[in-house]
Length: 218
Image 1 (cartoon, rainbow, N blue to C red):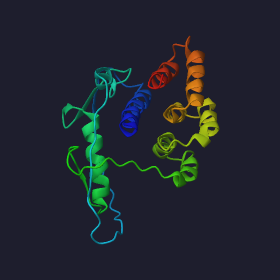
Image 2: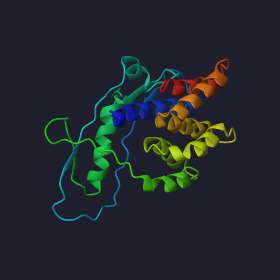
Image 3: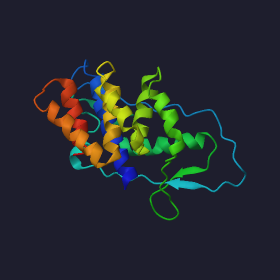
Image 4: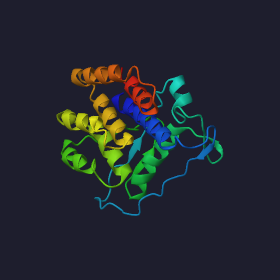
């Protein structure tokens, strides 16, 4: 259940961050989604590795389904000229990437031997902290988000400093805040309540978008 909740929150946070990035674009514009190119690097694996089927469950509310790909700026997000449904798209490409690398991974339907897999290796945390300052924005955002998914609660102070650093891009600060929310601890909840109170009277775009992220957890 936690995995799927994180998937929904990631999708929503990415949508809010995308809304910020597109804030200068026209309202109700058509925004096409393109498929990413799969990796050409292949893994070396023992012969006869067991096949794994991954299942994805959409647990978004009706409101989130309506808003997750448009956020505050009304846009027509499309895939192959049809309304974009993010969860099946994410599921398909989550499976496509390891399959392209030669791993026996398939997309299941949640029945039979299908397995839900979440990689949660704490040894990745120090490297993720380093990557959170990478020159590439998308690498930084993925690293910050992953700290929350891995429940790296020992990095709370690091993430709080990142969120409170107004010299960083808003996208970085937002993903750091999302990671804190993913911890789901009394400390993280108290922090979110404090930030929400500080933003309560503000009406600017950054504050509005930030309050949307906080609302995912409170």
